[in-house]
Amino acid sequence: LDKLNWINNQYIKQADTKRLTELLIPLLKARKYLAEGFDRNWLEKVVQLFQPRLNTLNDFCDWADFLFLEKPRFTAEAKGKLVGKSLRDAFKLLLERIDKLETFDLQSTEATFRDLVKELNLSASDLVHPTRAALTGKTIGPGLFETMVILGKEKTAERLKQAVKLIK
Image (tube, rainbow, N blue to C red; front, side):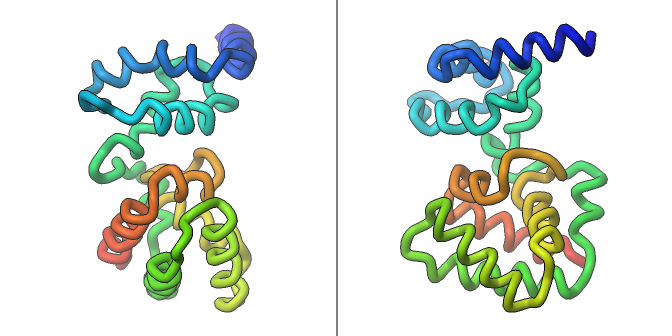
């Protein structure tokens, strides 16, 4: 099974993103993740973001579910990443900085995040992993800044606000 998954992963990596997206649409609709008139260009960007990591098409539906749901489904491990008052304060500062961004793209989100980490005298991983958990409900996934951009400024901010409420 491991070898078959590896072979399938190689096939998916090399597949045309548009074709892969077409294959995923029925699966996403079956899970009620796509509404009528969904943004196909956005979906293709999402598929492209996950494409190198997929072994099966169902992997996409499981790993990218946070993009289609109102609130992410938190794994126990992800909930564990959301612990500590200092994290609450860091999320609040990150929210303030995100709110001030005029352009919400890969470069601006990464620069804002890295400046904050430096200012707080943290290693990047001290905040990357909890932020990913807050945004996705998972501990693994695509790059954090790519995830933030694909979620968009409003959803990113909303999920950080929700995480602040969850942190004990």
